[in-house]
Image 1 (cartoon, helix red, strand yellow):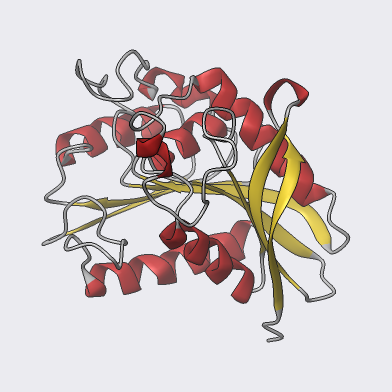
Image 2 (spheres, one colour; image 1 turned 90 degrees about the vertical axis):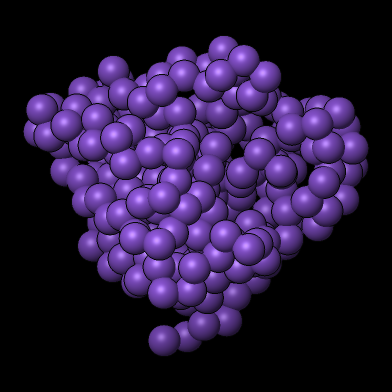
Length: 248
């Protein structure tokens, strides 16, 4: 497989037609290839998530990660995981704006010269919730939820996402197959939350694939955290590749 890529900061059209910063990593294969919108977690548009975006491109996909905090922290160092904190803490982004940013990122991917027109979405932690949000709000081809909390339950007072609604009732609107990757020791989402979401998907005849890992908690894919679990992460990556290979 030809694994050359081009990775760079770009400007895309986001919610309400606004120009926002994004990190693009795209394969230099002639194509046609699928595209993936990467949704970063609450700490922001950081080095680790940019590496994740490049990994997708190295694997033969086009990927783009919109900077969800571009409006609040313009010019902040995109390699700094604490960019959002310097702007006053993790920034709550309204669901409507998330959907608009993902729609703009999907349009960017579909407009690339080697695109096959198919677009998926993937996110971790808050990005996992937002991946599900995008999949019940937009026409997509695949969605991956990596331990997304507050899909079933509502965020408690004091949490950056407080005020965001639970999304499980929107399961009938899911537009594409869903891959869910969860830690059995996680609390947000807990195994009970995962079971509730699975029941809703099953009741609505949706195509989904869930995997929960014993001995893993939240953020088990984050290689720079003590929560990292290599065996779970390796298996999860294999499932991500197989899933995107099937649907994109």
